[in-house]
Length: 251
Image 1: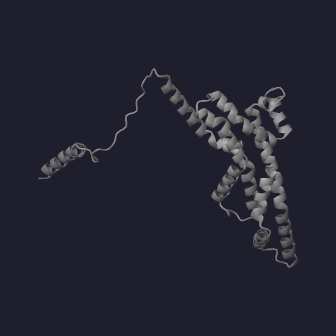
Image 2: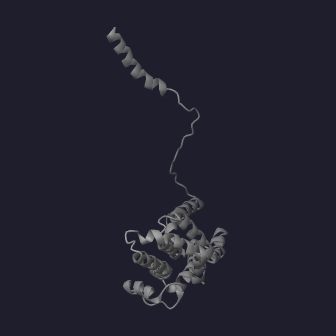
């Protein structure tokens, strides 16, 4: 009897997979067929190349946003403000990044509009080629970055790459202008961040001195000064002042 049960169990284990896969579980489930076909049409080749270029641009879009716009200065200053308040993760990183993105889009709107009018729309209309469209799209960014790049930072990368001193903005290569603009933005952001830290540092020193004079040396001064920092920041409308200073710094 046991042998018969074992034989039936073995047969069932063998037949169940074949029965279960004999018919599809989800009839009509769509399939995919990816094939590479040769073509003699130049239009098809052009569309393929444009698609590859688009995917490449999308892959480096975050780097373009961070290093070729006002995003770096804004997000660093907002982070300095949060650290000066000593509120840990308030506001959270998502809020700071989101605010920095929208302020960046607001500041860069004239640049984006010029790129759209001078490069994107003529290219989509077939009036200019890809090379000319790229050159036209880069010009507004070069004007913006050169306006906020220190000469010594740009000279550093030009001299390292043995690039002769350019006579015009068009002769400045992007591989030198972009990192020079990035470190210039970091220096400006740290300078503004230092100015933001000063009033909160003074408040910390006052609270620490009061606690020491009262003999309460075991109580952390940061814990006591935190509510006063927040109150001071709210009374002076700190976020308005910070954003206003950011907008003025890009004029």
